Length: 363
Image 1: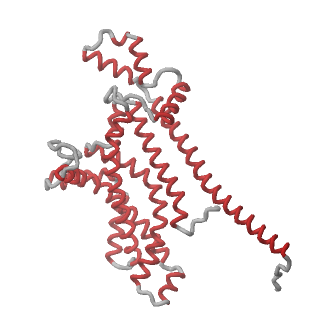
Image 2: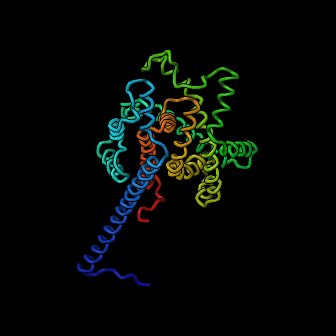
Image 3: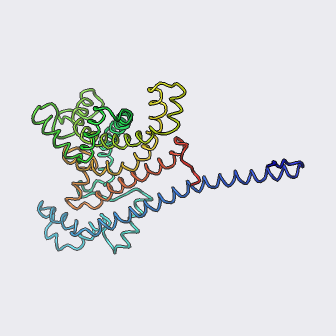
C-alpha cells in the first residue's frame, strides 16, 4: 500500500497542526488524571472527616458531666451540677454548644482555617493539638522504622524466595511467613514481651525510655529510646515483613515466565544479573502503590501495640481520650490518621507514573 507524502506547504502545515492538537489532547488527559486524583482525595477527606465528626458526637454520654463531677470531688466549686452557667461555659469551650449543624460548621471552620480542635479534657486547658504534637514524634518514629524495615526485608526476601521457589528453604520461609502474616501484631508483641522481657530480662516491657534520664540528644537517652523501642518495632515489623514477602513472592513467580527474562538469558546474562536488574526491578514497583494502601492498617494496628507497651504515641493518647470521652483529643487523633493515610496515598498515586513507565496517565 502506497504511503501518501505531503507535497505542498499547506499539507505539511495541516499535519503539524493535527500533531499539535494530539499533543495538547495528551496534555489535557494528563492534567485530567491529576485533577481526578486530587478531586477524589478532597471528596474522600471531607467524607471521612464528616463521618468522624458524627461518630464522636453521637457517642452516648456527656463529657461535660465528667468534668463537673471531677471538679466537685476536688471541692473547687459548690453545687456545680446545678450551675447552668458553668455547664454552658464548658460546652462552649469544647465546641459542644448549639445544635449538630452549628457544631459541624464550627468544627470545620476551626479545623480547616485554624487547625484548632479545642482544649483537651485529659490535660485541660491544654489544647488537643499540643498533646498530639508531644505524642506524634514517638508514633512517627515507631511506625516509620517498623514500616521501613518490614517493607525492605519483605520485598527483598520475597524476591529471592520467589526466584528460588523450588528449594526447601524457600518453601519453609514461605510457610512460616504465611503463618505470621495472619497473626495480629499485638499477639506477636505479647509473645516478645513474655520471652525477651519476663523470661530473659533483656529488654523492658513498657515505656519509651528510662524515666531516670532527662529527654534530649544525649547518647544515654538515645540508647535508652532504642532499647525501649526494640520490642514494639519488632512486633510491627515481623507481621509487616511476612505480608510483604508473600505478596512479592507471588509477583516474582508471575514474572519468571515472561519473554523478556527468556530474552535476557539468551543474551548470556548471569542469573544474578537477571534477578537484580530485571526481576527485582519489576517486582518492587507495584509494591510502592501497595505501601500506601496497607499503611492505614499499620497505623490502626499500631494503636493496640502502643497501648500494650504504654508507648507515649498518638495511639495510646487515642485510647486514653476515648476512655474518658475526650471528644476533642480523640477527634484530633482520628483526623490526623485520616489526613496522613489519604495524603500518602495521593502522593503515591501522583509519583507512581514517574517511577513506573507502565502506568498510563491518560487512563
